[in-house]
Amino acid sequence: MSTEHQQYSTANQADMILRYAESNGMVIIRTYQDAGKSGLSLNSRYALQQLIREVESKKPDFEAILVYDVSRWGRFQDTDESAYYEFLCKRAKVRVHYCAETFVNDGSLSSTLLKTIKRTMAGEYSRELSVKVFAGKARLIELGFRQGGHAGYGLRRLLQDQDGNPKGFLMPGERKSIFTDRVILVPGSAEEITVVSEIYKRYTEERESCSTIARELNKRGILNERGGSWSRSIIHCILTNPKYIGSNVFNRTSFKLGTAHVQNPLRMWIRRDDAFTPIVSAEIYRRAQEILAGRNRYYTDEELLGLLRGLWKEVGYLSTDLVNRTKGLPSRNMYDTRFHGLRRAYELIGYKSPFNCAFVDEKKKLRLICQEHLTHLVADLTSVGACVHQDGQSDFLKINDEFTVSFFLVRCRETKRRGYRWQFALSPTPNRADITIAARMAPGNKSILDYYLFPGLGQLSEWLDLALENSVILDSHRFTDLSFLMDLVSRVELKEIQ
Image (cartoon, rainbow, N blue to C red; front, side):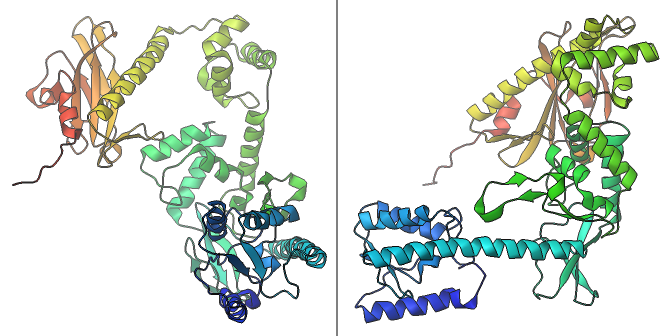
């Protein structure tokens, strides 16, 4: 049963099937029910899937399948699909009976013709209903009412009666219960609106990528609309959805009659501007779309180098910040991807940076070494029985679903007056992992000297400057290896006390 008519309620179907069974000397031993499911495909009809699996097992404990009518077997858009599932039953010597039909499903010419017609009518009914429902939704969109879907971060769904009087907010997962009620979008909390504004500012003015913005929000402990971590796709959705400038848009994507989910072109959108109170200005939204379009455009290597060469001639110098904030120029990320870094792109156009890039090269080398050690750490933790999950958004390791660990390398610097030094910053306490592992590199930065393990709730300063020998408080966190951590996470089998 989907939700279309009371005549197809599961209770009514069950009554008819029971009467049919009693009048034909049958006993119902089991019922398969897909309540509230569409008959367009087999995907969400788990009861029917189970029935087909039992039939195909070649050991079903029943001799017949009783169905209310042909449309309840399925409104498949391809009538051959419906026939195929019935053939599987027939091959297993399980006969299908349609209890409310006027014909007997006995394989005769007349029943075969009628069944084919009924299957076609069932599929056509769904197509006609889809057209009518779409037209109705499109009309309501043009009137300024919201049609389905969650509100989105920074917005709320407000329920109104037929006269436009507010009735209250709909919480996530809630739906209207009265047919004549309508839903509109209104601004959410001031905190969420501030975050949305920050996302647009970072993207349009600071030219940060969606992934960078998501990482920053996660570091600050800000949760998304559903209480989880931010991702590139969530940020991209906020930047591209016109509802943030008060526009009511429908049919951006289609999923009609169980077909593949498709992105519709702009000309197919149903749109009503100024339907809701905006929380982002139209100008900032337009700038965001221009940047998105520019970043989505494919540039040849020659075009990218030509744009960079033109900027050099116009300004007289090049830098990462200049590339990122120059309007009409692809971001630094594109040059990194295509040429393995801006430095290589500089070389190809003949530009020599006045800055010493040795430090940049060393940082890249350390990142690779850090990733290698992190991989070994995960393997070692797993080998002692720990369950390790790596959070791609925060780079934390979650151990046994109990606590988090962060790991990073600290470069060794040699100074003339103070000798070897190791300087690094810990994350602010609210965003710090439960255990932070700072691995100090030995002089030369080719191997690890020792490890400092800091608890997340400690009172340590966020900026640390370590020497070879430090205070008792600091060096109490020092370890020559990570055996302490292995002992902490390893699992011990409990034995029954005799």
